[in-house]
Length: 544
Ligand code: ADP
Image (tube, rainbow, N blue to C red; front, side, top):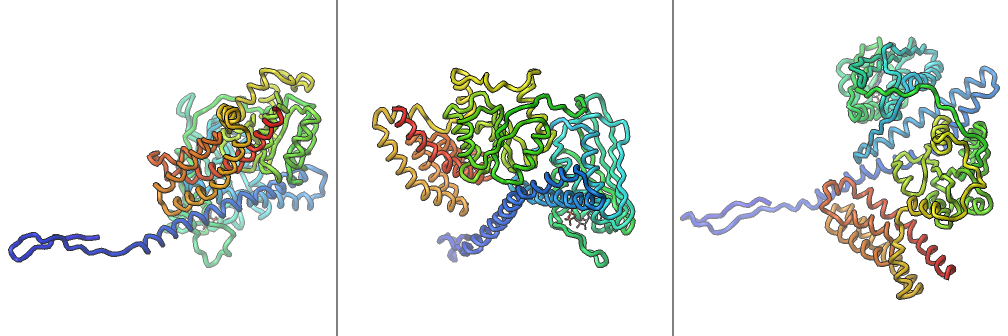
C-alpha cells in the first residue's frame, strides 16, 4: 500500500490518497515454492535414510565375505561390491546432510581421533576404488603430526572421502595422492593439512570458485559425465567451515587438481593402540527384524566370543526376557510391531530388566545420542555395526572397573537399584502422581473416558496446528499447541504436555528454526504415549 497526502488548491490537506495492490497470490505462491523445496529435500533425505538399512547389510556382509577364502577374481568382485556400497552410502549421507544443513541442524561432535588409524581406514577404501580404475594410490603422513587429535572423525572422513572419490572419478590415468602434514603450534594445538592431488582432467581456472556451489557441475564436452549430484563439494565446504577450517583448490586443465584442507585441532595424548575387548561369554539378546542386519551383527558378535539369541519383533523380545536373563540387550529402534523405545519402556516398567544394559542399534543419523539415553538406553551403536564401536561400548559397559561380565545370577530381582534405574532411565512420560490422584477421586473409568476424548480431539488440533505452520501462521499454531498442552495435562500425558508447551511459546528466540522439529516430536510423543497410558491404566486395574 502506498499513501500520499491529498491537498486542495489552498494547500489544505483533504485526506490521504492510497494505492493498494493485492499481492496475496504472489505471496502465497512464493511460500508454496519455498515449502515445496523444503518438502522435496526432506522427502529425499527420508528416502535416503530408509535406503541405508538394506545398504548396511551389503556393506557389512561384503566386508565379511572379503575375509573368507576367495580366489583372486572373486575377491575383486566382492571388493567392488563393498566399495560401491560405501560410495552409495556416502551419497545418501550427503543428501541427509543437505536436509540438515537446510535446517541448520548440523552439529560438530569432537572425539579423539587416532591419526594413523584414521588415515589407514580412509586409505584402505580409496585404494580399492583407485585399483578398480588401474590408478595408483599413494598416501603418506609427513611427520611431525600429532598421534591423536580432537575432531569430528565422521564428518572429517566424509569430507576427505568426498574429495578423494572425486579425485578417482575425474582421473583416467596416473595417480591419486593423499598426504597429511601439520604445523604444531604447541603441546596442545596444531593445524592439520590434508592434501589430495590427482593427475586427472583438471578444472578450468574460471570454474574454480564455482565448484563449491550447491548443484554445480563443470560442463565438459570431452569427458563422459560421471555420476554425481554436484552437492558433494558444497557440503564439504560447509562442513569444513563448521569445523573452523579452510578448503582450497588449485588445478590445471588436463594435468590434475589439488585440494587442500586446513584444520585447526587440539592435540590429545590418547593411546593410539586399538582397544581390546575385555569381556567374553556375554549372553546377548539381539532384537532386530531385518534378516541381513541380524546376520551381520550376529556373526560379528559371535566372532568376538559372545553368545547371541535373536528376537525379530518387540513382543518376541519381551517374551524372551520373561524367560531368560540376559547380560545385554541390543535393540533395533524400528521394529515391525513397536519401537525399540517401547520395548525398553515395557521391560523397565515391568521390572523385567534391572541391571541389564540396553543399547540401541540405529541407522538413524538424525537423532541425537541424548535422545536414546533419555529413552532408557545405556548407549547407542550406529549401523552398520563396527567392530571397534562394539569393543568400545562393551568395555565401557562391562569392563570399565576391570571386571568381567555381570554374572546373570547376580541380577537383583527387586529392590532399590531397579527402581532407581526406572526413574532415571524412563523419561517422565506420564504424570503418575496426577493419574493416581485422578484414579482415586474419579475412578479409572473416568480417566479412560477422558483419554478417549483426548484421542478424539487431538488429530484435529494437530491438523490445524500443522496447517498453520505451513501457512506461517505463528499465532494460530501457538494457540493449537496451547490446547494440546492443556488437554494432555488433564490426562497426565506429561511428555506430550511438555512437548506442546515448547511450541506454544511463540516468543522463543529460535521458534521458527525449531518448530517443525518440535511438531514432529510432539506427534511422536502422542503416538507412543497414548497407547502406553492405556497399558498403564490397564495395569492399575490388574494391580487392584
Ligand atoms: P559431483 O562430483 O557429485 O558432480 P561435487 O560437488 O563433488 O559434485 O563436485 C562439483 C564439480 O567439481 C564436479 O562435478 C566436477 O566437475 C568438479 N570436480 C570436483 N573434483 C574434481 C577433480 N578432482 N577433478 C576435476 N574436477 C573436479
